[in-house]
Image (cartoon, rainbow, N blue to C red):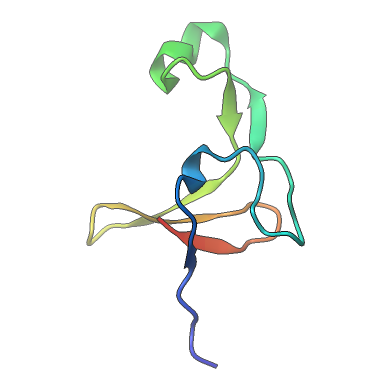
Length: 74
């Protein structure tokens, strides 16, 4: 079976939950220590969503849910 291209969902990186209706789990991780928040854009919590990086393109090309492993193109 040929590999299917990942679906594109706008602003996926800013979502707090998996958009897969069969999953829907939270992507909000542990709290970021206050002393480190300035390095994370003053975010209060780490994010669990996984960035899929392409070295040749030198950028993130997709996102993966750590629970259901479904991928979405960036």
